[in-house]
Length: 75
Image: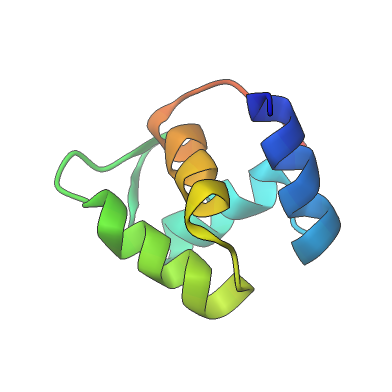
């Protein structure tokens, strides 16, 4: 599955775009500017996404990659 397909599936499941996840992660204190804080562990982000959005591990890791700066739909 392509990275964009992961993002499309996540948006279909949650109703949240990549831009929404960036904003939500910033509100949680996970972001420094437009990227994930260096000290933020992927496991903390994955736990949040699993709890709040019922994402599976692979889909949560796609959001981690997005937050680290991998390009996806600007949403």
